[in-house]
Amino acid sequence: MVLSRAPLLVLFFALSVYAQDEAAAPELLELPAEIAAQFDTRVAEIESQQHEIDRLAKEFESSEGLAAELYGGRMDAIWAAMFGDLVSLARDVLSQRNDGFDVDDYIDEIVRDIRDVPDEADDAIQRMRSNIVFPAYDLEPAEFVIRDQYLLRATGKTDFVLSSVVTYLSIADQLGIDDTNDIDFLEEALEESAANRALFLELALENVAVLRAAVAALPEDTVVAARLAVGEARVQVASRALQSIVDLMREIDLDASRYSQQLLTATGELTSDVLDVGVLAALAREWSTLLADLAKTEGPRLLFRLFVVVLILFLFSRLGRIVQSLTKKALSSSKVRLSALLREMIVATARNLIVLLGILIALSQIGISLGPLLAGLGIAGFIIGFALQDTLSNFASGMLILIYRPFDVGDFVTAGAVSGEVSHMSLVNTTFKTIDNQVLVVPNNLIWSNVITNVTAQKTRRVDLMFGVAYSDDVEKVEKILAEIVREHEAVLDDPEPMIKLHELAESSVNFVVRPWVKTDDYWDTYWDLLRTVKLRFDAEGITIPFPQREVHSSNK
Image (cartoon, rainbow, N blue to C red):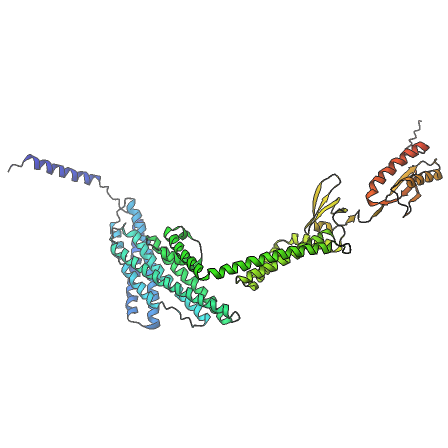
């Protein structure tokens, strides 16, 4: 038989393509013996765990009550360990395959074991759900909390099983397993769990709302308060349970926006959910509806309350200004001797107390309880006081300065290693203006803890001068000249009478003290005038103002 040329060409082309495919397929390397031994050991361990699970399953089916619960718990624990080992082995085997090693036998073993995971997970979930019992609301608070914690642990076990299925799906494609039905099972299980937990959270929120109303009506009832605390704890338990399911739903791209919205409304915690457009839109619709309903039902009453609050604040603000003006006028009387700072503080305190009273009354009109607010302010004051110890020390010193009035604004004072005119005083520090026009701010604590010299506190001051003349000068003549100079100066006061005395016989001079009294404002002018006049008069009268001299005697031998 003679073949035509075209079929021969087709046959040749097919054989060549097959030969090229065979040549292109890389030859798999043999798995190293050490790694193969490790894989064999892990496979044997997984098979042992599977046998133990099968044995416990039989015991579980034939048992009841506590025994069945113990067998089920043991079976779940071994299943969790086996699944973890199986996933770890699968990842290591796939890694070796990607490196070019022949691991087909191990993949077959893994596929055979792991493809039963969804069915086993379904059995575990059903078994765990049968053990989930929601505590009744009429239980004692302590028992209620304990039952809630058991409930949280049970939901946590269910979450682990669902998470295991999510992990299974992540490697099923790599193992060549058709996971279509498994995805449907997981989505259905997650949706059912999310719906149940959302309902649980909704009921918990309703219970808390009822208990809060009861506490408002019976604030002294400790039992109701305890139940409210337990109910708020249940809201947290329900929120955590729902959040774990929402996280799993996001891992497989299921829409969980409605549950995220419920969590955000229940807990008020800002998470990445607020960036979800669906959540934002749902919240916007819900809030707009609530605002519209509130405006219809409570609008007029709220507007009236707002008007009352504004009116109270306005009236007490005006009253505060009136009290401030009257207080300032009363303290400005000549009969009331107070420092400028103390007057300012009393005036400001009087006004602020009136305004604060108005604010508290306004807050009470909008339903804010003043008791907790005042308690909170007390706690905050304690914390702030502890943090500002140095500032409070200055404040205390400022109060003592106000009470004892060692100086006032306008006085020339030496205090805290600073000399100058007091230009401003506060309860924390004092501002000085020095003679050379520098401004110094000194903490009150430094001032009060040191010696304070008020130079201008009295209306009169004594000018202390000393003049030395030579031993050869006439003492009486010098006394007479000094007396004339002092008497003739217009700023020197007659009462008290000036003092002019021979003070000491020094090494180089006979010293006279001159101590006239002047008004405080005339002190320095008088001081400088007397110095200049005495020098000019001594020169005119031929009286010598000596200076120290030293004689050096030298003997030449």
